Length: 311
Image (spheres, rainbow, N blue to C red):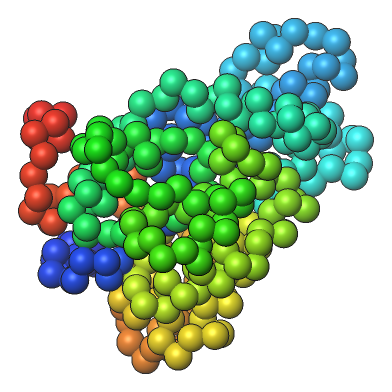
């Protein structure tokens, strides 16, 4: 497993050309803006199903950090059979769909947990990088609008496009505006791509567009584990179809002490072998906000609001 020295990368980031690096943000990038991560939601879904089955109020199992409560809830599902094993990659989509079988209800659930949330300092730092043209593509698996809000907090008149499943036809237009691409859909106007069957059927042209862009630029991944095959497949298609995939490196951020997904380790090894360099690898970070602020400082484009928050 290739570990990249963070300070070394920050120096590289500062001198690399505008547009040579893009971002992919997963759910971990929204936690500091008080949107629960997938692991938290899984336990909420389990609690709701368990309490409904035994006819008790959820308040009785309010503390989901309690090992006792988790063991009680998990034991129930293990006794039922035909449920995913604890911490398996299928848990999120399985329990979400089990809890809310109708897509309209899943949509309403997502809308409820993301509405009214404000961008963290990390999203605003990302907004500075986006507004200064340091980056021009942000891919995300998230349903929230924190990326857009972070950009608008920096420049309310910023011009950019939001592309999702419902607007994928815009990929081929001649517009060259910076883009935010929602890989799992956007609750505002299209079907949510968040259950197993939906995750496996991400549109081919989104994969193709990902490959065409990432054959020309590097990618920084933050808050995403690489656990769903649909998106990871887009990475492998890029590697297999390009002579020089991720030419400025695939930089996968992990929290200190975290063990990355074995499929991601394999992916990065393939990229380094094909490009015959060691630009791709893992960077250990303290968190999304902290790392984005470090990138903001390295880029040397200051913003008064961010400077005040940092103080």
